[in-house]
Amino acid sequence: MPISAVDVITPAFQHTKQQLLKPFRFGQWVRLALLGVATGEMASGNGCHFNVPSIPRKQSSSIHLGLAPPHLPPSLTHLSVPEIVLIASFAVLFFGIIMILLLYLNSICRFILFDSVIKRDCTLRESWRRWRPAGRRFFIWQLLFQVVLAMGFVILVGLPLGFAYMAGWLAEPKQHLAPLILGGILLFFIFVFFISFIMLVHVLAKDFVVPLMALDDLNWRDAWERLLQMLRMEKGGYAGYIGMKVLLAIAAGIILGVITFVLALVFVFPVVIAFLIPTIRGGPGVWNVYTITLAVVVGTVVFVLLMSAISLISVPAVVFFPAYSIYFFAARYPALSLRLYGPPPPPPTLPSLMTPST
Image (cartoon, rainbow, N blue to C red; front, side, top):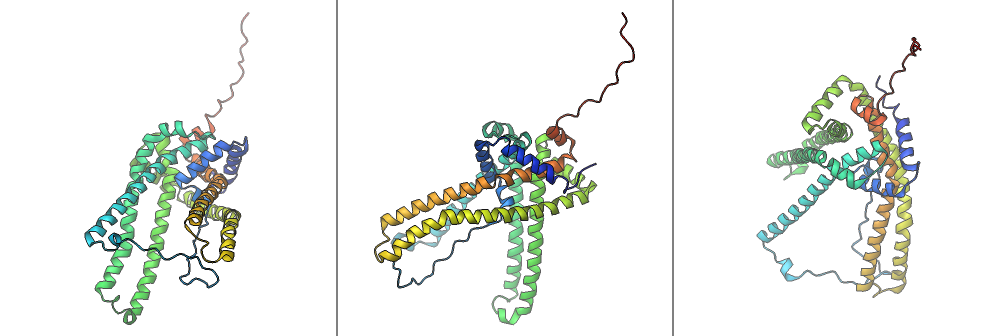
């Protein structure tokens, strides 16, 4: 019988401990940290976000940086509308290409992470060559998924705003407070439902569609059809899996969030104090080209070190959550069970009742 979502927590923990600590290999931690960043799996257990505080417009009289606001060249302040549109188009195109490349990397690395957890070993170069065809097929689905996601946001935001504008609610909002408030509440719940549905589809794809595509060499359409058949046969089991995974992600996010906050204080606080004290004591003229350059270099180094430390401490979550989905799905997917546990032992044979003739 398939085991429940609660029963697979223990084997997933044991798997994570054995892969990461028995024996401990720092190189494997680094490779798994890179996979966690590439696949976004690091965010499954890390719920903290960094908010950069805004700088007040009026500086205190006791601290003077001695810097005048930057002035843009006249050639940049007198751009025509077609030039602005052209620059904006190039910027959108550039960031679009970057996002597509990251999505392609994410698609292949998702299969590498799945294979690394099953084998309890992470090899990037060999796994990249092996899983690149499957990753390309999954990349097509992810690209279509992003297009649908963008269209959904445009519809959810654009249609209500367009209706409110055509009805004249935005021109005189005080006279239409009731429909604006009721419409905003309705739009909020629709938006929450849409985000929840998108997250559910994403979890099902990375946890169950990827194993089906990897082990049975399916394309994304056939993998989704087979997964939907399995979901219809055991709705309660998969619903329990989603609920338990949300609880585990919250718990892991709290733990890693506290550790990340402590690391941020350790890395950032001394640097801030080191630059703040000379500024307070030195008065005007402390900040110049050299000190600003030094601050940028030091800030970049500290940021890289901090993100590297966060990636390394997130490695247990990077391994545990795929292992959790693998052990749950292996009880329902024979091909994955065979890959995870190996072939079952042969049945014991009865001793022969006939003695060899002499």
